[in-house]
Length: 325
Image 1: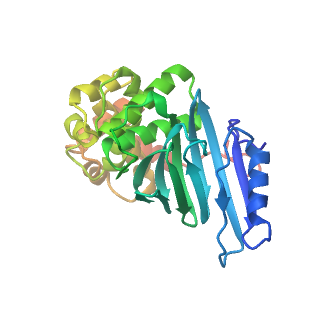
Image 2: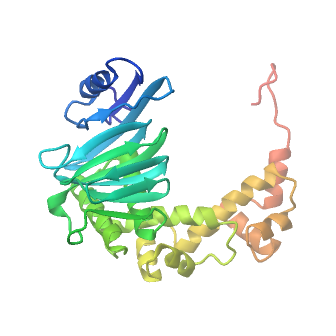
């Protein structure tokens, strides 16, 4: 079976939409590539003007949890129900691009880009997927979860703090796996419950996910938010400042230390890639003045901004064939 660089199971299939046995070809290739690791949901390829259907899935397992990075073109399918496809699971889709639509006799659940949907898969669902849809999927054992009574599904905004934390965590699992599978599994379930309950727990097992999400938020606000502070970051993530500081206590620097370092690194790049003056860059990156910026820059990088610019501008010695030495 194909696998990516980290050995995660991969499905990578392309079949023509108009082949007489297109559905059978898809099922045969899926089972040949994935076996029992990625169960095949009964799929039907619609008759479209496009030439071919493609699906790519990268999966990592954390004990009995499954996390998948999915790409699929337009397709119809069925999942769940008694004795059906992964019927003993709760399935969460983070739709990054495109759209999913799930239907039961009583529900019509749309999951367009920017939405996260949670489904009990002990119910039978029909689904359809828009062409070029990308999603991250999390599959959890239903017996280990606390779900709202009589709720078959939950549909939420992917930008909510709890959703961002869970997505950051599962993406890290996709890229790095779980060095401690039991701890990773427990953290995943806690973060999932936070999504269901729309709250973020102050649990040390979740601190690494909180730090990752906070760093992503900081990166987007470095330039546009001159008042970036632990309070504003914590408020955006729907946690207390104390929880945020506790999460960063295991890092090599504090929350604001990280903010300042990232601003200095971005400013350092602009010193040699733009025509802005040191004073303009200091103001752009929210330093009080060029003197404060210069002191912070030299403390971090060991040279002044002026010397850094001069060093980068100095011609380098070359060897006999013109190569820098």
